Amino acid sequence: MILNYKEYGSDRFRAVFFLHGLLGSSDNWGSTCRALSEYGFRCIAVDQRNHGSSPHSPEMNYPLMAEDLVKLADALKLERFSVAGHSMGGKTAMEAALGYPDRIDSVIVADIAPIQYKPAYIDYIDSLKQIDLSGIKRRSDADSLLAEYVPDRHLRMFFLTNLRRSDDGRFKWRINIDGITGNYENIWQAVDGGRVYNGPVLFIKGGNSGFIQDKNRDIIRQLFPSYTIKVIDGAGHWIHSEKPAEFREEVRRFLADTLQISES
Image (cartoon, rainbow, N blue to C red; front, top):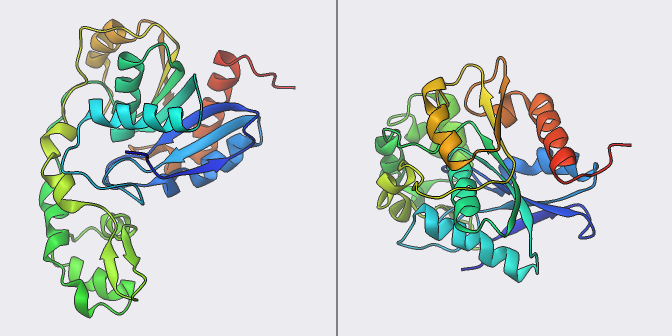
């Protein structure tokens, strides 16, 4: 499949793909991509399969999502590129580097390690199917119905970014809920080992997040020997939205260094 994407910056610049996390979309990277494009990067924010405006599929795992990314690069005639990803997108980025090392210039992983995690939020995501959208007139109506299943307002607001009005005026979910829940274990799986990517990899950890821990460094080192970790104090798991300026500066410096782009 060819994924939907949004592009920022000139195609004369070095290309960097940006991959969102679970239930996110390319929209999550808009401000980051706009800012970084001013520094001479061609930023391409991607909707991963079953998300945003990209195609739906009953199959979803990291090898397939990495293959999706490479197919998009092929369609854009990009032989080499860098890739940045948050959470689920970070695992896709790691899989792409390990599976296609000759295509990847450098990798940025935002607040995720290449390990298996305990699945979370599955009941909340399943609850989206319980909402009868036929009578929804406005987004606030959906929020009121979803509150019965998802009490956390911030989490509801994030889920509702996936609610869109179709051409006939009715609301619908743009994510493939069945495709995501049917492959939910795959999303939380570890990145397969036994492979090495020797290129530069930057892990950015939220200081208040527990997704990357000191005990994860051994497996990170085995897969990515040329890795570094930066910690952004005061940030949780959603680093790029909680501390956008600090996150962008870490990304800018890393890309400028690894891609040898002048900072003058």
